[in-house]
Length: 253
Image (cartoon, helix red, strand yellow):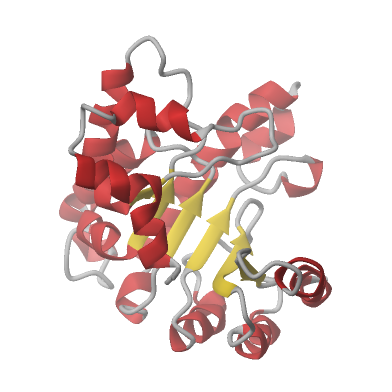
């Protein structure tokens, strides 16, 4: 399925429009074959990343079973993207999803909780230490969860470092060097736009990239982010968030 999806996207979209870019879909169920797919597709025009469906990922993203995927991505100088999702076919994690009675309950929780869990396992199990030249991108969980999670991970590293021998530094230091996050969904920020700027400062503005999620109903048009942070953050920081950082991460020219 991943191979067919990659072929379809490359044939129908990338070949038809040189301005479009795409990741290679990696099937986490078969990491060795996924690595081969990455090697085969990495030099295709328009390929700028590797993407792994991250909700329902068993075992989680920090498990060594995925090392072939990370190694292939690092060898081909492609960032690895994690995109969470909602739906009946991906209810393995979090467990509470099995008890959700509405889509609203499910969707409100699944994206940030999935990102928290995968980021935690990746850091505590030493993925950035094993792949120091690899960049990671977490999508569609917003930004509010990032500072809280990093505070908590740093605290646990200091308190329980004997259980985390794979790391030589605070988890947040690895995040600021190798991990990036997309901004959508911003949430309901109109009443206090300065709070969004504060959250961005706490999360690390150099590691954030604007995303829209069009055409989903919870998409964020560019002005929804730009108008909230313009004037609260300096122009260089705003330019990076709105596109400059993405150009660097995905090597866009």
